[in-house]
Length: 117
Length: 113
Image (cartoon, rainbow over all chains, first blue to last red; front, side, top):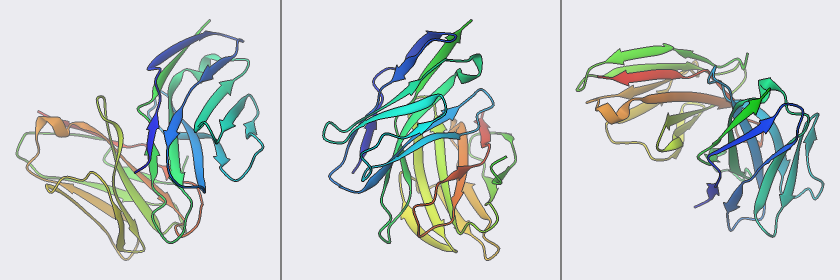
């Protein structure tokens, strides 16, 4: 079974600074997807960024980018120019490639990010 | 707005009772997933349905059951409730049978007293 580990339960960053959230995972599969979800106090789960394991290029979405190290099974999220609205719980998630099976997500336990003005 | 609708938003009930949580997926989505989010266990996958059929089962207790109806909405039934069942229950949907992303509803906050 796949597992996702977020070892840092909390982090803080100053507004406009850069912060990196770490995530490691364990799998024996070669094809899969990795995600970062954001959960603000409104509790909605918001997809931040997605990475396909077969792509060597790291995904970017505006101020959000990832450092995907397949061999090390590491998937970190970098938030540049942090904004107050980035304060939230961040969850790393794993999903197997669809091959007639389930597309369920396996989540890490999350990390609380605080942005200080 | 994700397009996934969950009702009710909040539910307070007593131990031993039974409740039903409802989820309407995004238009066009055939798969529905249920997750439980508690402080100590994080987001736990409970069960997935695809077009009315159970597709995958996770850490779902025997006291819990779910189904997906012909109109694709889904219900999660929780019975013989215990204090430890207090949690946020999320429903998510996806097209299914593809690598399409999951879209989450806003959750139902269940409090068992």
